[in-house]
Amino acid sequence: MSTSRFLSIVYVLKSVLASLLLICGIQAQAAVITIHPSTTAVAPGQLFTVDIAISGLAPGGAPSLSTFDLNLSFDPGAVAIDAADADGNGVMDSVALDPGDQLDVLGLGLNPMSAELLAPGELNLFDLSLDIPADLDTHQDNSFLLASLSFTALSPGFSYFSVVVNALGNSLGNPIAVTVNNGGVTVVAEPALLQSLFIGGLMWIGMARLRKRGAQVV
Image (cartoon, rainbow, N blue to C red; front, top):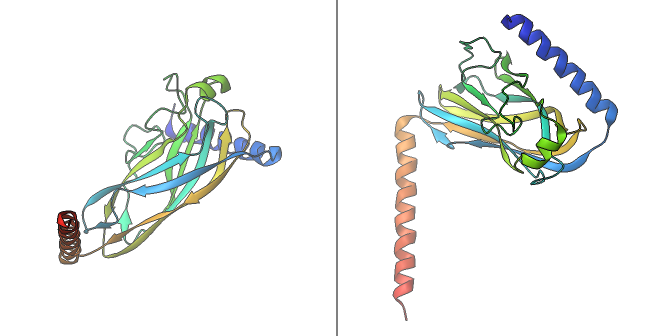
């Protein structure tokens, strides 16, 4: 199957899914999506990861997650992501969707999914489970990673990482209420980064000495 045809099928699935979720209008237990950068400060040229996690689902029951359609925004002047898709499967090589196979609990590898840049600084992430509701409800964890992305720091500045939820569906296709905790990364020049780490180290040593001195007081 060609990449263009695959992406066309994914687009149709996403459109149908979004329409069904809007029409249904039923919301289940609220979930939480949180963005976890691997660091809060990074030097230009360095690699770092950004994980997008979900929590608040039910362990061993409903609601579980069957689909997500998210837009991740970031500052393209401060950080960059490689848009290459070497195998043409519709998912950028720098993105791992559902790395723990929580939307593919049987390991069939058939889920329609895509990760693509819509514009500079805007990335769409989509995954649709083909597992039956009972399997998702029984075997899915109540918290897991939706995606893990690899970024490169470009130039000093701050990059937000914010998510807009286009669709989030439970095992029956009904929408899940969700709150989002966004994140960010500061790109700093090398000397400033070292200075920040040095000051942080001194503060940690000072606090450790105070704790030790306090423990010695009878």
